[in-house]
Length: 223
Image 1: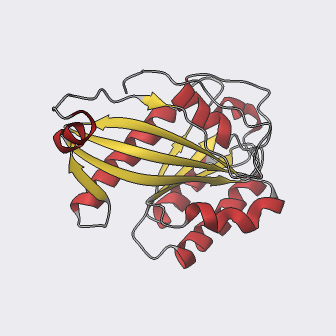
Image 2: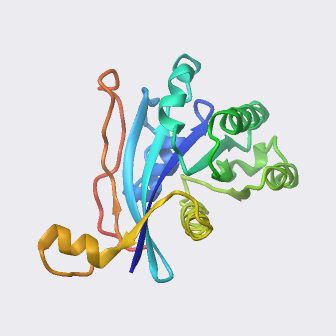
């Protein structure tokens, strides 16, 4: 089985639900009491796509403005980005346009970008028309998807579609680490064994990020 490794960064304003979205996918849980991310949270997950496996390093960044200067630490060398906004907040949608410009200026390598309209359960309070968001995503060569961390809606599609796009990027000769799973297995155990793709919630925090980070427990759940 072909394996590629990629780094994905989750960007967006404070309160749009970035952490809830990631935790819902990786930890299969939802909490209304997740504290604001401090610095960044780091998760890993394996996603099976056709006959390949994508190992994602997921960096969930802080949305608070006081952490903005730290952002380049996290999106440097990223292969993909989820640009998350709240469909009930026009300001949060405008903010992702700034993130796109920043990525385009600072990440010279080809990147998979996905625009994510979160909180689609707040349809009655919608401030960003679906068509407008989809049109913007198309203009920057990104996919558009609407999600609800509360209802676990659309989130798997975002990650699986991103993983598939990363496989295409690797096939186009982009500098993504790629190898055969048999080689990995022999290195780890001395004999080839098949590893089941799983979601694995793991947190690694910078020294300043030591409290109030909510995350899911590891789960062995196939995509």
